[in-house]
Image (cartoon, rainbow, N blue to C red; front, side, top):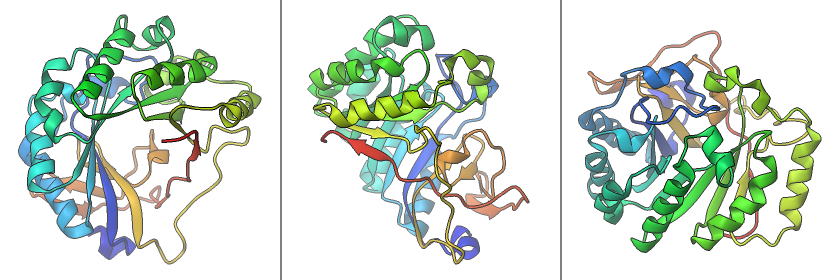
Length: 300
């Protein structure tokens, strides 16, 4: 269906939000009130979508998210299916809070564990949850010991913009290979915390200069919109792309083709779980917008 409407023939990665439910209520979370929603993929529904994406679009990798994916009771079943049955690269993005037992269970089938952190020590805990910083470091350390590659994400805010390099140093000591920096989008919980916004655009310029001049021990990937002028417009060419990097499925089945669409509730395509098919539901607000390239500093 996607190919028929858009001309897209290959989608490299599926970002699959298994559920909205989470054991955190982070100040900047874009889900906001949806954290209370019960929508979720069952293991069978997730397997069906994974199979469809591989068979029809050559999807070769999946990133499992939430909410908190480790709160999904059948996470291990989904991970094993993606790896063993489909041969896909499997990544999980988690808050890393008290996941040691389940992480040990799925480690043989996991290619990358990515943990979200918002700074060092109390800075992180003030945004996420008390005790979450040390718990996240414990999870990263365990993953390393289990032979699982690790990465981290950080949403840049007024509270933590000065802690990017210190956090990178801590992560490097744990063997973390990559840190992704994201722009704060004022949706969900962040809409109630305008104090988190970086109000001086020049601060992004200084951050980029620091990253460019630092001898970074790990790779740092920066959202292009972390700049003084924001992200440039980057839409599909008039005749449509033939291949895209990712598509994201939320717990309801709504499909979004760009992370830049976070916060919008207009989706051209939906995965109907009961029928196991993708359908087209066009809206005047829908357009295919592709994410702009990120900027990479340091080394992998």
